[in-house]
Length: 412
Ligand code: FAD
Image 1 (cartoon, rainbow, N blue to C red):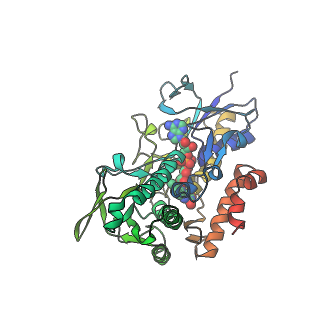
Image 2: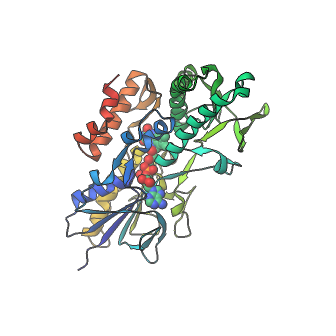
Image 3: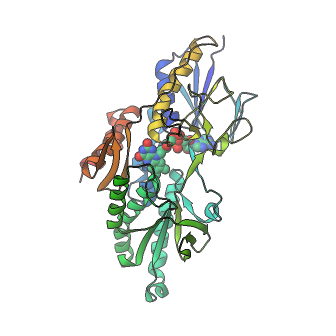
């Protein structure tokens, strides 16, 4: 009989770990495993804010997919997924022939959500992928170079302004990294540090919604000491090629010229947003066993999925941590389906969320782990442990040292 084919879409946290787990638990004769990803590398999405600010080299956060999967067991296809045709049980790719599947894992990650704000899509930069992070870094460097050449701006004592939209996890981590990079860029281009400003705009009255209020206050003070200015209870009304218009109780405020980096929201990958799937804000509500509702052979993981916390009745925030936990249950459930009969009992996904830590540049961090609130060195240590643990999950010590992830922490 023909071996069933398992197709995994996306080699982010959820996809790559599902592939690694399946290559371990399924025998060669039990199933064919295919992994499809846009690029031939896996990147550490949780470090993208550093790549965007230019505080980490790209090579440090990208890993060749072939280095972490067994190519004897998993066939890797570098291609872009265009559509999933559930009736025909096949995936339409941008370049290659359509790919038939018996079991499908959808782990295509997130896309920025613009909430219909005018001009964001066209004029703001957004942290989305390795390539978008590179674009942001280049845009920042270009703005510094232009500002240094602009004698009129110098004479009029104008500011070089960066507006970070959103004070969630990504916005806070990015604003801190950018502020850390600014002194070096100022030195390089001969610009007075006082002329450069980073504004963080947040619609809510507080930053880091969902964090403990005391920890959020700590983070705010830490960012302010790095030079970040906050506009809280303020919405971005529109973005255009020159700058941005803000709206608060005090009225409208025009900030131009300004470069806008939007981190205000994420949604699921639009590839999954079609009539074949039931979606909530671009995400597919995952069943208890992580299958897409109405689809017995399709699993949804990571940022394309939404999982409800049965204790609070609210969705878990989309995180790498959740994606990693899902991958283990998904792989086990697929293996059970491959091996078992139609009515085999699948494992229920009950995540144990250990906590969250947000970095505030390279010298500070804030978070809560196992219910303990952390900041400063302890939080930074926790962040390092999380990263090291993931690198070990992905490969081996060679990878850890080779990528310099460990050296990032042990060298001053
Ligand atoms: P991703 O890791 O985004 O992977 C998706 C993959 O699919 C990518 O490889 C992409 O190239 C590929 N892909 C996308 N579209 C296509 C297509 N059409 N065809 C083929 N391939 C495609 N979470 C934490 O737990 N802790 C943190 O500290 C943390 N920090 C973060 C910091 C930043 C700056 C950001 C942006 C996010 C952070 N998160 C953090 C959230 C976390 O990164 C995501 O929840 C996690 O990446 C989701 O994993 P995923 O596998 O669903 O998607």
